Amino acid sequence: MTSAPGTVVVRGGTVVDATGTRRADVLVADGVVAAVKEGLEVPAGATVLDAADCLVSPGLVDLHAHLRQPGAEEAECVETGSRAAALGGYTAVVAMPNTDPPIDSASVATEVLALGEAALCRVAVAGAITVGRAGTRLAPMAELAALGVRLFTDDGAGVQDAGVMRRALEYARGLGVTLGQHCEVDALAAGGHMHEGARSSRLGVPGIPAEAEELMVARDIALARMTGGRVHFLHLSTARSLAMVAAAKAEGLAVTAEVTPHHLTFTDERLTGYDALFKVNPPLRTDEDVAALRAGCAAGQVDAVATDHAPHPPEAKDAPLAEAPPGMLGLETALAATLAALGPAPGAGMRIEDVLALLSWRPAAVAGLDAAHGGDQGGPVAPGMAANLCVLDPALAWEVDPARLASRSRNTPWAGSKLTGRARHTILRGEPVVFDGAAQR
Ligand code: DOR
Image 1 (cartoon, rainbow, N blue to C red):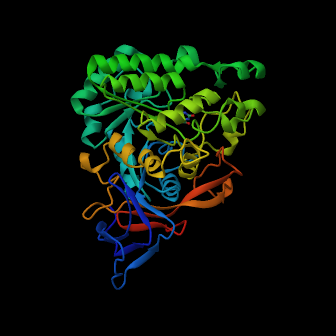
Image 2 (tube, rainbow, N blue to C red):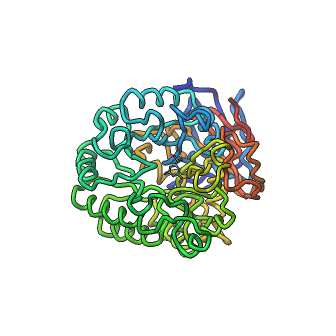
Image 3 (cartoon, helix red, strand yellow):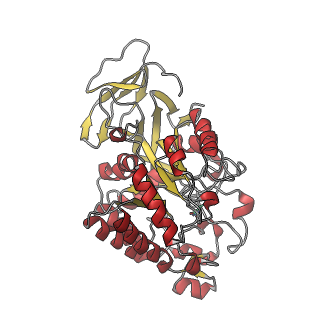
């Protein structure tokens, strides 16, 4: 852990957290929130962070970031990915285990956690469910859980074998951890490069049907019911997936779900020019799906907006659609993109407080990083709580210039887009790691 820095006053903002919204200054000392009230006196020597016109929120928490280390440092590494995260307002990310080697052992998890100690946000690690993410033998989940791993996933691929998934859920239940499923039945999805539908037919591009996702969602809901294990559904992309999860929740099953900013924004129409920048798994779907995902967020059926930040180097993404890898950047644009999709009109009409819930305290709980699980993320902004905060200006207009992103890769689908809303300051354990929109190290 970095050493506790000095005293910081966040002045003139509106504090937003799970307990509500109020105008207040925030005094931070020794890495902890010391006071929250209007008109705080600034102690001598304190650093003042201007929060005029800003919301002061618990730092954002990303359940789904590919940091690519070890093994694909040409695309991203813990340092660059965590800097992108901090600039995006995040104080914690969960690093996905589809690295090379994958995070399927205590030694690799320890390596990534150690790299995270010096990072600009907290780096939690997701462990693989199966050895090598190959879908056959269970990874040493107990050893990984002993290191603090709370989420396990073979993301990038779904666990195809129902028997393996059943056993993994039984173990997970005993360990008190959650399994994150990348829902995709290989037998239906293999060889596809975009959503299967009228557009893919017209373009002559092999498609990935909605059913590839929905069959696995249905199966894993059945397995959650059977085992009592907790399933977190990663990056859901279809209306029917979400409807099934909503029904499972209503039944009282231990299931949670995330959606991504890109699935809340774009449709398969973006593939009309065969642009691999918009190739992603699961694929961008239809207008009806986008509308259903937005409505599901507004209705409280979705637990988190997660980035699926998936950096790929330009030479890989510049390839023809069939050869390019799936994935897009997300950490630096998620806040603005999510506000546009879900926030007050023209979005889904959600209150900004409820959008922040999906970006911060609700994912913190899913990841087991919140105070209720002994963690330091997701607030509330109250005396005695860890000072992991995001000061965001919801009205700041900016243009996405891929060359100016902190990520080592450039594959943002928002390149050249004008977005509104951005982190002004990000405070990690009391240290302003982003000040006035600039990373401090
Ligand atoms: O588009 C994607 N890219 N989806 C995934 O599930 C994996 C990710 C990656 O690792 O590039």
